[in-house]
Image (cartoon, rainbow, N blue to C red; front, side, top):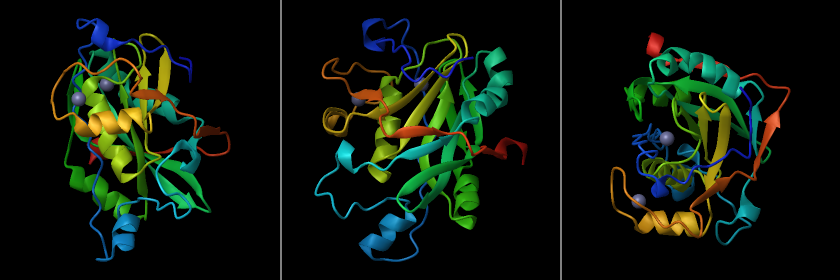
Length: 235
Ligand SMILES: [Zn+2]
Ligand SMILES: [Zn+2]
């Protein structure tokens, strides 16, 4: 397995046969706000308010630190599903401290999957786990057991929901067959604006250019932190 950050991205819309990923989430866990003020709501949702930024741009994004062993641990968790050509999904959870966002926990929800889909169930368990530990959602990860690493049209809409809650949120796609891992983010202007206006569901074509997503520029591998695995499927 290699952690290739410039993962080869297949352009799915060009080859429908190859582009069968119809992943349906996990959607971002919504944590109930504890206050009624807008700032309180944003904090409760794990949304960072960028007081010096008038609009969301790449310059405003904080760096997300990713534990070095995250993908290796996830690949082990997913191995059994992968063997049976079934997708696995997880939530990237962590903390914010002094303008640094750190992924610390990999939450594996109760889920059901197929060769090209994965649906989280009992999402309230994830919300409860995070709320009790003051963890916020920083993105999601899923496997493409038999395809390359890329974001399908459904993945793009899932990622939109994450980025609307947390501008820095990332999507990681691990492809065991092609031994590649993609770290993705919607392009700030083109991707976000285009997907906000697209109301189609399921597999559907999107514009090819300009690209709707790209490899992340605001992530770094944290060599000093090990991921904490929380497999809620076991409970
Ligand atoms: Zn996918
Ligand atoms: Zn769409």
